[in-house]
Amino acid sequence: MAKLQGFYHPKTATGRASLLPPPPWHYSGDLLTIEYRTDPRRVADLLPDPLQPAGDDPGAVAFIWADWQSTAADGAQLLDPVLGQYKEAFVVVRCQFKGQVFSRCVFIWVDTDFAIARGIHQGYPKKLGSIHQTRPHPYGPAPRLEAGARFGASLAAADRRLAEARITLTGPSATNGFVNSHKMAHHRQVTSIDKSDAYRLDEIISTGAASAEGGTPWQARVDTFTLFDSPTEELTLLQPDELIGAYYRQVGVTWDGGEMLHDNLAGAKVAAS
Image (cartoon, rainbow, N blue to C red):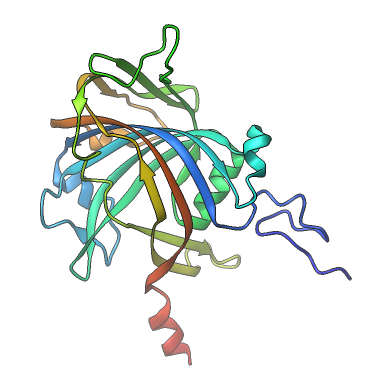
């Protein structure tokens, strides 16, 4: 029997059919971010134990659209872009664990299978969606990265529009916002095959960029920002009560793993032994 190869399924004798190459994964992307405040109780409802709401500004939320080119270490996906280009829209809140503040993605939609698979490995709750955003370009009718440039973005899933936004750049910014500026605290969970109400893997992990670079962040005015009801989504739980601001930035990041913060099964394992 051949030893099966591949970082992710399907695994074969060569590993060529694997949906994902092994990390590190490298990304180049354009990020459109809208930050706002919602009822802190709504954020707390999305934080499982032992995570707690952030002590400062616990109702702060970031809604982010991202247009990515990604690749593994050999750069092959850049020359076969169907394997590395994708778009996503995701919602980030802040939380704390043992006194340290983390960012946490509570909702996220992507438009490719490999991005969903990466999310399973990283602990992101990814679902399939339709995501679009205006792309800047130095020629023609597309906006430049300059004051007065206007950008739009939309998100839909299961045949229904979930969110849309329009922003106008107003000038350079010192930051790209604060909600999504910490390491992520995510869950990796696998349900037991024989007990649907039990886990075989249930851990809280922390991940962040192994390295990062970026262009000048741009501050923006929020012209419109709307979340829509859907029978299959709960995004409107985080309806905005107060807008904080908006940002646009081009970035490059590398992801290369994370660390365990907490094993929710550790107590059960000790008791069983």
